[in-house]
Amino acid sequence: MDDKSKKMWILLGVLAVIVIIIIVAALQGKKSSQTAGTPAGTGQTAGTEQPTGTTTPTGTTTPVQQADANKVYDLKGATAVVPGASLVTKDQKVVTPEGKAVKNDAIPNTPEAPKPVLVSKDQLPKQTISLEIGNGKITPSSFTVPTGAPVSLAVTSTDSQVHVFIFSNSAVGAIAMGISGGQTKAITFNAPAPGTYDFRCDVPGHKDKGEFGTMIVK
Image 1 (cartoon, helix red, strand yellow):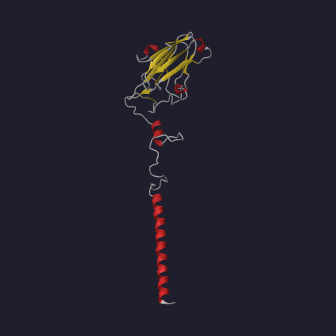
Image 2 (cartoon, rainbow, N blue to C red):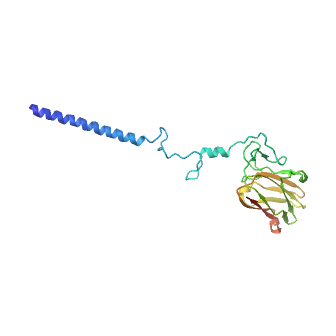
Image 3 (cartoon, one colour):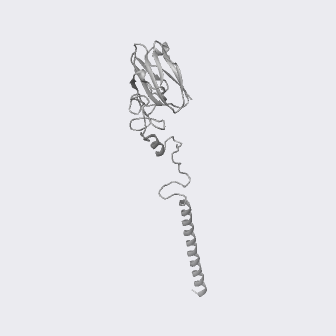
């Protein structure tokens, strides 16, 4: 092989090496650009994280919302408007003895529901909304409360019969009381969202006689 041929083969070999180096560099650059926007260990592209405390399209909630639902309120200075009933904190939140917000939609008389208590009617505080039930009517048949405000509601049976005071809307289903003849029971809860909430006596036939009414929340 003459010198000219040797030089040609050497030149081709050098060019081949250069091409390989360029291809490898291009592949590495492409891989880096694909992974640069992903925070280490997240497996999620930057800019697509769900903001903390928001609801996802599937309706699930983040841990922040769940933590708020389990919030424990400061009981310092909390008082029972009606003796023995649920406590009301300084920031006007009705809570359980453990400091968690009571649930208006809980099963009545469970630990997480507002607590009804048997009281003497003449010992009810002035701010109590006092209803009388019996003889085919509830008096007054309606009352109005501001949304979110703590409400102390008392119901007195004015005849010799047993009455069961309940709301028709499950959002306030925990607010329920059974009252024997001549008894008074009271319960404290935070008023729900604005709207009209029907209540009644749940003893068969009593609503048909006229034992029903409406709570208006504004």
